[in-house]
Image (cartoon, rainbow, N blue to C red):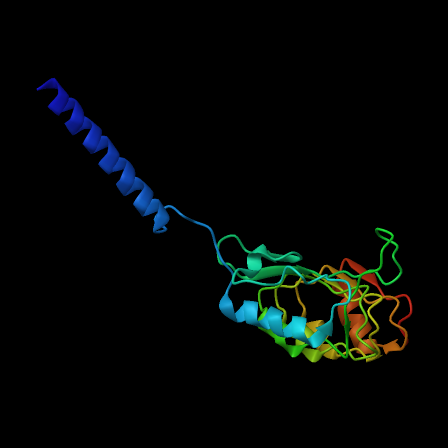
Amino acid sequence: MGNRRGLGLYLIFVSIFLVANTCSCLGVENTSIVCIEQERLALLKFKESVIDYYGMLLSWVGNDCCMWERVHCDNVTGNIKSLHLKGDMRGDIVGVMYYLVGDGMSFSLAELSHLSYLDLSGNDFGGSRIPKFIGSFKHLTYLNLSHAGFQGIISHHIGNLSNLKVLDLSSNDGLKGHVAFHDTIVKRVKFVRMWTLQC
């Protein structure tokens, strides 16, 4: 009789354990977030638009872009919050050169509407213009496009970045800004660096 009671308690304990683990595996207690599919596809389109001689984007494979290097997601929503794609064309940082090469910034990045941090500095965008869609990033607080090979007139759309705190457009030879651009940005942004900017 005692063995049956012990066996019954054992079965109850094992059943509770199995139910608890099953619930956890089904996601009842699993709170890990994966990235938004539309944003993952946008990053893959960006990856296809650049030449990555040095393997900066090698980790950009698989379904969860929140696990990719240089990509950070919101822990609650899974939206991409920051892209840390700083290159180094001179090998100053770690003694080795690494950077991306492209004819311009892929429009696919416009899909990342929750970005608050974007660093594309130290890459080579081949003398292209800073795209107008940059002004659509309403949450952006940090934008670094320095040493990135941009030229031409800065779009007034950058003035739409009402939350911007840091802007670095320095060392882009041939980059030009309007007086209205200067008035809008310099009054609002806490840190602005545009060493070689022509007016």
